[in-house]
Image (cartoon, rainbow, N blue to C red; front, side):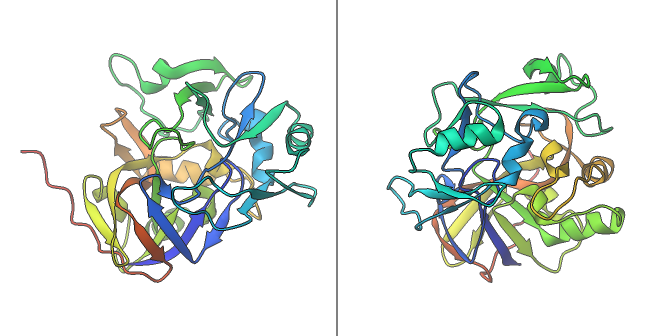
Length: 304
């Protein structure tokens, strides 16, 4: 396999950057989710996973004004607003402009407050989430409120399985293969399966067919000359993948297809979920680039 594409998202839930080279650190791709938008009234980290409140974030894009350096504070980001105007994160009027555009008082932050959390809406799609899990489903245990539609909204700690002090939802690195996307296109040819819907950091290309990442949790592989990543668990897909973003339209069928064709048991959270892609952590940092080789991991050994 080889690295087909690399992506970084400087501001959580905004559109990000396509890279030709990246640095992997113990916090994932250097500079990824370095900033986030904070809802001042509630203290919630804003996420487009609650579309009614935060869909507007996907109309913004962010890029670094200089390449981040490991061990140093992240450089400023340049944020392009939906109307085409551009402000930097170190501009005095940024928070006021963001608040006006999003319709809520917000601020751009680079360090999560203590106890930071985000919310996630669970759309009414059959097979998306575990149907039964004794004594309670993860969703039952995390429900904080309901949308007007009756759909559940859960509350989760930021970066529950990732590096402390980061803005990731769960893990520090998200990997997808083109073979998974190709298989989904075969199964649901009328839906759109652009990798940008799924916000991966690394997209891999190889000769294997099907949902190859399903077998990777527990295994470690090498990227480029020295970087190594350990796969943790399959990526549960969410409502954000269905939303209009960039040139991509609204498309609930992209999530329905995953829920219909690729449900995976995830021991770390319990239950069987609609998945595409795989989370990973960085076992050894290093420089990687588009075109670099990726050693296909052997399936993790079965428990004794």
